[in-house]
Length: 342
Image 1 (spheres, one colour):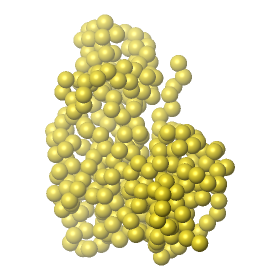
Image 2: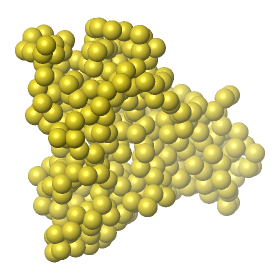
Image 3: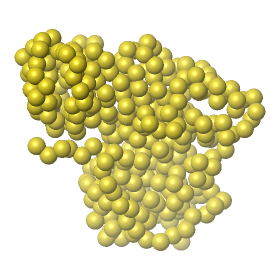
Image 4: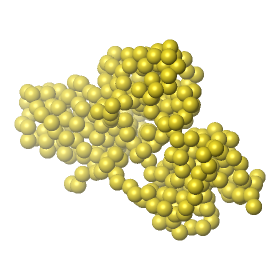
């Protein structure tokens, strides 16, 4: 069976549809935002310790940084460690984007009987591709049978009845249930002994920006004391980092404010577009400066967008940029058509 390509390995190319320039008077590059906005539209690649819940960890960050709103990208059980993306203030609007980005875990499976190594490897491979799962009793979602995609189950090593393996999977996959099912197929039973999340979408444990709760407290304390914004960049990244695995569409300055008011994106506003966009797929809409404007659903595929001169090409799902960041250059009219001033 061919290996399913995980989102972080998908190769895309940004194609040019039209030429335009951006006005430096409006907006700014994400990395150059003023301190308050840098926090407001920031994310943290946090390494969650064992013990607290994901909600408790997020609440501690909220208290440390004196924030009004905070979110996180994917719940981890209290005993599980690893990557827990934290979204700050207005960046919480795009936390749903992490659901499309996939996860990676390092897991220790404890078997309840003796099994040969070749049998373990074979059964791990059988669980690659699409599988059926019913969420466990202790879960935050309805216990309905559903499908999830396993991109890979990579055998690493065995020590007696302990099996170490790496799994890349779609968001919402229950690794505890996966371990149980593997044990059942092997005929001896099994359970998840230890688990660490090594990736959540574009957030990885080998990143130089991965931090602990202690790092957040220290660097934010330094920022408050010395009023030096460089300390913020030690542990905060712009929210646009979380969108790097989602196909993108780059638009004109003149189209930005219309989208911020809820208009759908029309063909004249498109400057660049990623390859591989299909009808119905989630896309991230950016300015020429690299700022995230909105999340949307593509109404037509890449090649069709490149050839269209009019009509809607993406339906808005979530606006990320506040109104008025770019000037209004459209007339009031249909919510589905941008009408530039003459």
